[in-house]
Image (tube, rainbow, N blue to C red; front, side, top):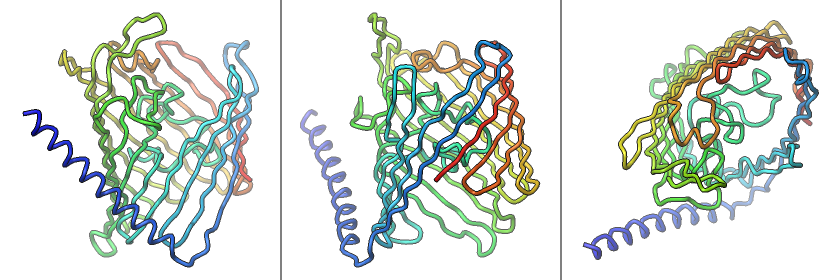
Length: 366
């Protein structure tokens, strides 16, 4: 029995090695092309003033510095890097948010190797770290980053295949993503960039349909499968995640970005199941965003919703909120392509506590 298991493992390793070898050979062949590489470097940041209905918490805030670079090596290979530098209460923090190489052998196939945002839903694909491009002063709760008590695996380290093809001439097009990579760590902030805490790999898939007759309209579904390793304990030795958890995520989204209207809505269901106990934990979350442009001004509103099982050990260890019901309304003013001002009111609800905020944000890039 053990010999057969070893044999199967060996075959899988050989198959994986062959795949990597073919990909590497293709990349090296493309690098020999005569096209000269190009480099586009951008820097983004923001500054904001926040007033709360608790006066002692009102403050000015210096945003993070987003360093964005993309280089086209030739017609088939592109490299992208996005780094974020921010100030925290414990001092400066620097992180590599995205770093990958794209290899595009055909119009319908693009291979991406490295660290990117997980191909789930719409917001994670359309909006990255720069506040300049985001429609509001904060990300939706369900699409928040791992370091901000997010609930989704926002960053993905592995291999992803992308592509798009027309399904009906002048009628309907399909884009897809299919990836395999490192799974979650023992808590949400434990993004596996240098390895994996178990042998189980994460699988992700996304299908999005574009209706040609309605430019800017997209409808999509996505899914994610992984096994979260158990055994995580706090500094006192208390075990917070006592067993492995099978994680499944399903999501659906609709977006319409046609001037002057912008509509975005997403919904997710996350299920964690204890491998030993068989106990299920559920999370439901989503948002709905509506905006209408009046020249350089865009009034907008958004509603965020999140609810989860309060006994979920993974989210409890990750300090993720058990519930949220946020309402935002504001106006964006964009005098130039690389400057945006946002004035926003927000009612934020966390753990049955309600806070009213007023935010004035200036986001810029150069």
